[in-house]
Image (cartoon, rainbow, N blue to C red):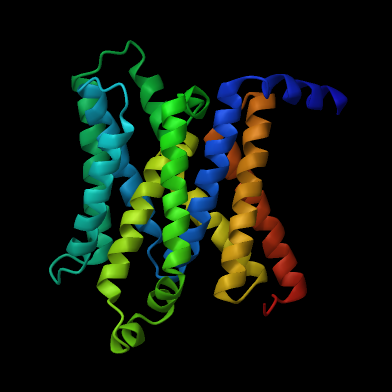
Amino acid sequence: MTGIFDKLGLYLQYPFVRYALIVGVLVALCSSLLGVTLVLKRFSFIGDGLSHVAFGAMAIAGVLHLTNEMPLVLVITVLSAVLLLRTGQNARVKGDAAVAMISVGALAVGYLLMNLFSTSSNLSGDVCTTLFGSTSILTLSKGEVWLSVILSLLVVAVFIFFYNKIFAVTFDESFARATGTRAGLYNLLIAVVVAVIIVLAMNLVGSLLISALVIFPALSAMRLFKSFRSVTVCSAVLSVGCALLGLLIAIVVGTPVGSTIVAVDIVAFAVFSLLGAVSGGMKG
């Protein structure tokens, strides 16, 4: 045990490890805040669809040889979130079909571009890194870290400031509309914030595992708690804890970061499910 702590202390002396921990905790916090809303609104697959869009955007950034790909990926993903929401409201293209269409299309186009315009000798490694995160979280520059911090703080601020509106739209959108709440505007806000979270999480867990980061903490918290506030707080604490533990395990053992974090989330879900079955759930 002492050897593990000594190894951790050694690794924490390196700036890139500290950067990874900072960004990982912030991404986990942001993901958990909107995760509860997405699960309750049956919007879980929007995160999955947008993550594939982000993969396609990263392929475009690679073709253009951009040194900082995050701004382009952010713009394309946010625009796709708006398009997805508008398309999902179209009577001819239902919401789940719109998600599938954009998701599969972006994934296919992204992989096609990476094959046609690849300048790397290890294409399969690049694709694997983008899809599953690999160790890309450990190669963040100081500029990327600051951008992640700013975007994370904006996400948290938006959630806190519009908490009551998000709560209303989440539980009873029809009633919210009847009371004068612009539900369409807040649904759009939720979609845009989710797009920002997706882009932030790309380096942490990769595009294929982002949905797990968003959904698992919320589902785990729902096993024990019933109120929206309690579930959100528990989800945030659990998500940050799982991300931190997963990152530390990955750094010490050398396992893929994204997969390790998701594995910790799965274990946490199993534990919370067991506790919920034993206690019958809590009212708070």
